[in-house]
Amino acid sequence: MNRSLTERLWAAALWLLVGFFILNLTALIATVITSSFATRWLGTWFPADFTTRWYFSAWDEFQLGDVLIVTFEVVFAVVVLAGLLGVPAAYAMARRNFPGKKLLMLLFLLPLLVPPITYGIPMATVLYKTGLGGTLAGVILANLVPTVPFVILVMIPFIEQIDPRIEAAARVFGAGTLRLFIYVLLPILTPGVLAALLLVLVRTIGMFELTFLTAGPTSQTLVVALYYAVFAAGVRAVQSIDAMAVIYMATTLVWLLIALRFVNPTQIVARAKQAR
Image 1 (cartoon, rainbow, N blue to C red):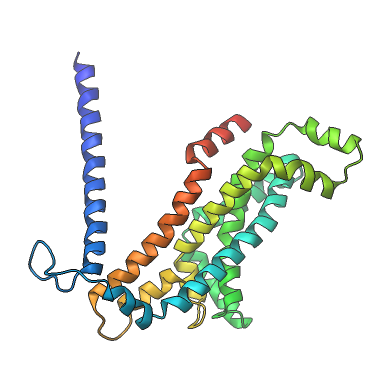
Image 2 (cartoon, rainbow, N blue to C red):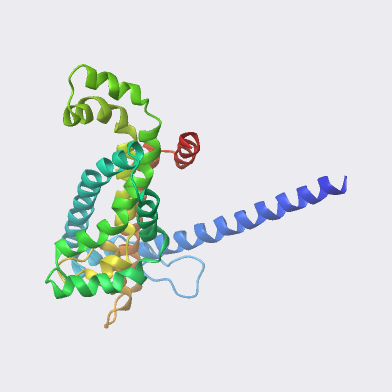
């Protein structure tokens, strides 16, 4: 009886904590959104009036058109390159045993486990010395460091669950490695590849540290531009910055919802357990 009461109390405390967190997060987001539409909001529960002019002001003041173009250039380049490099590497890791495989897996894990700032500073130093710092190519290369290992680790369970006899049968009928991969494996792996690349897309949009350290005036993504809007010198309307933040949240949320449409995070864990 006491044990049952204790479990109920723990469950109630847990739900209370989760509810408190969700309430605070919702209130924070609602405040930013409301402020982005407010004409004036000082010392009252609600703004005096609402307007959309701050969005037009933010678009012109922060050159959001150019920033969004750069953001999507970086994001889609990272997604394509991470897929081209990560999927074949994941196949090799899933199907081949070789000396040092566990060490290589550990190296793949490091960019995901170690805070980006710890390796971002020396990497940015190297990029600036080679002339890539401050360029679009440098930002893309910096973002590939954590995203390629991410694709590899996500794709390995998907590949391991494919019966090797399917590949053996295709080779019996004369399929080479390239044809095997394109016509046999890729159609089977399409859901996994799509899920991994969509998650990479969302991750890259939100990647701040590496982009901040390697971006120049013409290679800033939306999250870096938002940082400069908040902390750069000069006086800016709070509503205009909030409007920019709402645009950033909306951009990230749209792609996150698309990603969740194709992948359930618990499925990745389940597939990994099944592969073991």
